[in-house]
Length: 383
Image 1: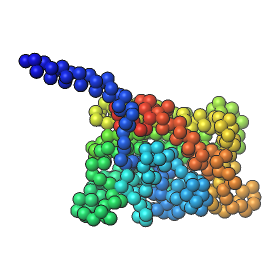
Image 2: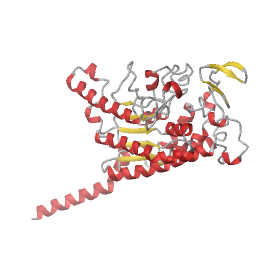
Image 3: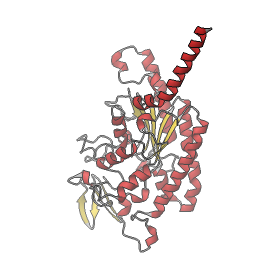
Image 4: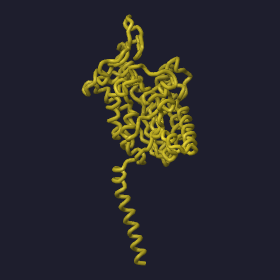
């Protein structure tokens, strides 16, 4: 009896120590994600749309990669800094067949992608033929096919670029998508018409998360959409005489209000998903606020004016995109990059420079803009 009592006491003491010390141990160890699987649009595309269609402008990639890297930016994107923070290599695009390495994840994002399928074309207005539901289908195929090859092919040289089956449930699943859905709404609908469409778009996003959960995904890092009305290409239109057109820092109020409404509904849906997916850890990241803070304080933070564009000419209807020739103010021009991209927030009027992406990443990866407030290294833990 005495031995049994001692055993029970020891067991109780061990349980108590683990419960008290568990958080400290967890904080110290982190999640040790073996891979990242990313879904999104050009804000996180590391070469998908370039592999499927045309290479990026020659100026893209000049800051870090010193060659076109498939990114719509002078260097690295936020997803690249996420990979670096987690000690993982930069993600290969799923659609890229040359030099790809999928051992530590894959990137299904493509420039121009939307959550909901659009009745538009990449040739008409840049909308990707790979919306979120198709990206999830691609992931499902990727998982099953790599699993088959990994199991059947015993050669280490053939396996070295493939993920291990057990890593899928331990991986981090990241999302940065929705901006192009809002842009499409402004192209084709009134504000009131589009507002009525937002719940359906959010529901389709939730279905994508649920489908990935059924495939074994458990850790989700979800960016909301950025301030669409603060994109430099928008800021370079001639000022409206109506002061109500703009928000307090001079961004397009209607576009930003729509982004905020989209984000409000997205956050609400993520909260509901936590109830429906009991084994999932879902982190909602307020990318809008992080980007807005950067844009609002551009010059204080060492950047040029928020409307400044490094590569391209944009003023009203004169639009000469980065790496292209065209007419601007009645003259033929070539849209080359600026001397120092790191001074600009905007790379090409729509996408952020590496310097801006670095600033944003530094402010979101520590959990400051997250719900729950956890750093990305701990995004596998439920709170």
